[in-house]
Structures are given as C-alpha cells and as structure tokens.
Image 1 (cartoon, rainbow, N blue to C red):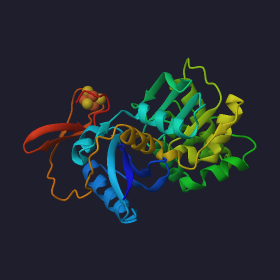
Image 2 (tube, helix red, strand yellow; image 1 turned 45 degrees about the vertical axis):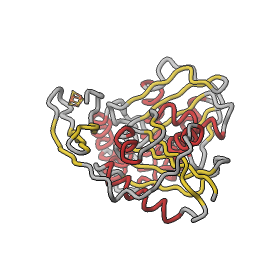
Image 3 (cartoon, protein in one colour; image 1 turned 180 degrees about the horizontal axis):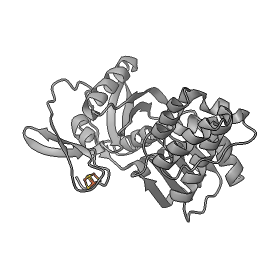
Length: 311
Ligand code: SF4
C-alpha cells in the first residue's frame, strides 16, 4: 500500500479537499459549496474523494484549515489543525519556494501574506466586509444579467473602464446601478468593477504592505482574468496564478498532515459519528450573525458563523 494525506479547507462559502502522496502530487481533489452546513459539506466532500482514491492508497494523515477547521478536525480525527494563513503559505511554498507575496481573494474574505526566505513576515485578513470578494462579484454579475465566469472576458474588451466606488458593497451596488442606467457599456462597467476590486484590496488588505515579486494570486477570484489584468497593471509586476490556486489551503494542510504524521492509518468512514447542532442569532452588534453551536455527545465542541470570532 502507498501512503496518502488528506487536507480539508472549509470556509463559509466553499469546501475544498485534496489527497496528496508522499511527493506532494495531487491524487484527487474536489471543490464544493458549504451551503451553511460544514458537517454536511465535509461528508459530501469525503464521499467524492473516496470514490476517486485508487484502492492501493491508505490515509496516513489528515489536516484541516479554514473557518470551521476545529469542528471538522474533530469530525475527521485530524492529526493537525492550522489557520488559513499557515496553510496557504505552506501550500504555496511547496510549489513556489521563492514566493514573496501571496494575494488571496476568496468567496467571502481576502488576505495577503508576505514572506521572506520561506518564512511569513507579515499578513492581513479581511473577513468583515464582503466588498471585493467572490460573493460580491457574483451578485454584481447577476445584477448585470451575466454569469460571473464571463466577467473576465468582458473586462478584457474594455478600453475605458468606468470608475466604481467599491469600498463597500452598498456604495458599489448603487454606483453600478447608476452607471448601467445612464448607458455605459457593459464591458466598461465590468472592467471598472474588476479594477475597483484590485484598488479596494490594495487599499484595505494590502494597506501599508510592501508587495514584492514573485507575487502569487490565488483564491476563487484568481480565475477572473479581468482582476489579474488590473493587479498586473497597477502593481507593475508579473502575477503568477497556479491552476490549483483555489486549492492551496487544502494542499498546504495536507502537506502539514504528512510532515506531522503519527503512524496511524485513518478511515474515511464518517457515517458512525453523530453531531448535534443548534442555531442561534447573536445580537452583540448590527451584524446579527447566525451562529451554529455544535455538540458531540451533548458536549459543546465548536461554534460556527461568527464574523468577529467572539464564539
Ligand atoms: S458574533 Fe455577534 S458580536 Fe460578533 S460580529 Fe456577529 S453579531 Fe457581532
């Protein structure tokens, strides 16, 4: 039997999983929507990965990362649980050992990681405002009657991107509606949105950070060629986008699971494990987060859905 390692990156929007071998080659991977239920999403993810794993592999390590990492770590009996910053850095360094800057824009948050000689020197995350993230782009695409996968194509056609105020979702939406009503071309509006996402990211997440090459752009939004174009233009540097960039957190935590293996062989049969959940709404601030408390054998093991980390 050959050894393999599972990495799971579970966020509020998407759940990513990879199984790698001893040489960090990806044997199988999957990217699915979390749909408000991390436990259900992970059960589904494991079913998909299990089907694609050749029978001559055995799982010798499991790692979890992302906002529900602790919960899913318990569910899977993980041998390592680490935050997204560490997982993304390790995943990226595995393929790009010289990387100096990681730009990441995901479904609902964004981050920047600065590195020197393979060590994280600084980082920042934006989890509170959705402006400029993948979910924001999808809702703006819908408003324009487009599929978000067409955004890049439209953005590249534009010669005169319009200025969109994207520092906040509310401003951006009203600005976009106004620009569409007064008759600007769709490609110029789309290009304006892509450009404003880059400016918003650099002025917020990247504020005060020295962005040095090699620069790797990852996360779901890195599939958008319009956003890549404006990162290149505004930073004046080449931007590397890896085809597995959207899986980098899962790859990183799988690599860490391999490095921290404890000699145990893991089962991917999850059907026997019972978890209970209770939903409640926090009234601690106007975000009114919908939270999920998770119990195993009546014992509270984790809470999920807080935007501020209070629970
Ligand atoms: S968990 Fe409560 S205090 Fe924290 S952001 Fe959500 S609503 Fe506000």
